[in-house]
Structures are given as C-alpha cells and as structure tokens.
Image (cartoon, rainbow, N blue to C red; front, side, top):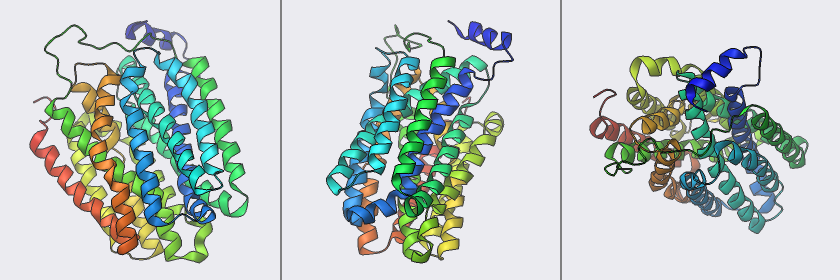
Length: 394
C-alpha cells in the first residue's frame, strides 16, 4: 500500500479515532513510561540492592551498549519483519523487561534486568521511529516531534510515579502499570497500524549510494551527545536530588519528571518551527539551551535550583533527537530503518563512555559536578553542526 492510498484511507474514515498516527504515538508513550518508571525508582532500587555509584555507572554502560547494539540492528530486523510485526512483538516484551527490572532483588539480577531492558528498548526505539517517519511521510506533514513528545510525556508520568510508588506502595505496582500499558500499546498496533511490507531502501539499486556520509556521521555523534545528556538527567537526577534533600526522597523523581515534562512540551510545538527554521537550526539552538541547563545543575544551587536546571535541559534536548532523526532520513538514500540504525550506531561514541565518566566523577567529585561534563560536550556538538553539516537546502 503506497502513501497516497494510505492517506486516502485516512481521509475516507475521519470518524476513526484509532489511526496509524495514534497507534505509534501510544507505543512512543509506552517506551517513555518504562524509562520513566525506572528513572524515578532507580534511587530506591539502588539502595535496596546496595549498588554504589561507580558500579551503577558500569551497569548503565552495559545498558547503553546493549541499547545501541539493538538500535543498530533495526535495519537488519526490518529486512525480515515488517514494522507492524516488530512493534506487535516488541511492545509487550518491553513491558515484561521493565517489570523484571523494577522488581530485581539483587545486584546480579539488576544487571540482567538492565541488559534485557536495553535490548528491547533499543529495538523498539528504532522500529517505532521508522514507523513514525513512515507515518510522517504518509501524512505529508511534520509530526515526528509530536511522537517524541508522547515518549517524553510517558517519561514524565513514569518518573514522578516511579519515586512515589517505590516509597509509598512498592515497585510491584509500577510493574503492573507498565505491563498493562504495554498490552494496551500492542492492541493499538494490532488494530490500527497497516502492514506496508518490508522497509525498502529508496535507492536499493544505486551502486553509488553511501551510507556513512559526513552529514550522517556528524548528526549521529551530535544526537549521541544529546541522548547521553538525557540519559544522565533521567538516571542520575533522583540520586542528586535525594542527596541534596534526603527528607524529600518521595519526590526525588521531580528532576526527571520536570525534565521530561518540559521536553514533551517542547516537542508538541516544535514541528511548526521545524518548517520555518529547518532541522539543522533547530538542533543548534536546542543544544545551546540544554548547555545552559546543565551548567545550572553543575553549580549545585540546591533542590529547587537543580529541578529548574533539569527543566531547562528538557526544553533544550526536546528538539534534538526528532530533528536529528528527520535530518538523517532526508540526507540518506537508504531505507528509513537503515538510516536511523546508522545514526544509532554512531551515537555509541559519546553514549558508551558517558555513564562511566558520570560514575567516576560522582564518586571522586560530586554528582552535580558530573553534569558539567555535558555542558562542554554540547558546546562541541554545536560547533560540529555549524562547521560540518550544510544548511537545509544547501
């Protein structure tokens, strides 16, 4: 089924609320919810199993490596399974992996849980983004950032609930919530997502097509820096806030919650500026805002100041990933899955060492100081975008 027929089908049934766009948005929300629940509950889980900051850095490095390896395999998976088939299988598997991670009773099982979580998060991430770009193409308008906004909403809700539930009820309640949400997401995909066949390359028979172009390499590295910062804000914010105000442990998820909430707000409204300014300019401006947020967190202004810093980081990082993914698809002659898998592979350069660096700096200096590392990396990313990536239309 081509894009014209899909659009015609959508127009022919305006009364249908559950559309391909809504279905993939729900999947984005489910992935964000899982990450948020883990983020909000992580500080309590680490205390429960007795994991130190450096060891947590090692665990998150393992998570990042598996996540990236899984994302990089998306292009291979799309050769054998359609996007619909992949989302139908991966969404409930993500729910099960998240539940297992939240209930991990020991350090070894926490490592195993993070490995499984990273595997299914990474695979679903690239598949749902590929589906998102296909829906954007079918609709004929920018909408990818809105999908990422749904993920940020899930992250915000999960982060706030994660800490509240962990302290006041128990992680079993969070596990039940993510299992129910994942089941609902798989049902939405089953009912509304069309099976378009295998994800074909747009230049499958061109012998001169190059996958690792300069633009794709730089975009991959820049997106990697942004995601590394996002992961740091999500996974270390609760630890930082709990250390700054132990009496407020039940709301330590506010850092990740405000980060994700502001990120979602930005993403809901970023598609219009994308049309006006272009993806490249949006990425540069967003990186600058995020750098300011990281500096605020790094100077350690206390609980309220850190929450404000995380909110600014959310605003700044909001546009980078969706604009980066959209730019990568535009600048590549290969399939959507192949282009996004290539970007995912390149993000490993900053993402893999970042958790280890965070853990080491947190131990020998402070968690707040570790966030200063990302302010410097974001400035370098801005320079790379301005120097090595041509403006849109150039």
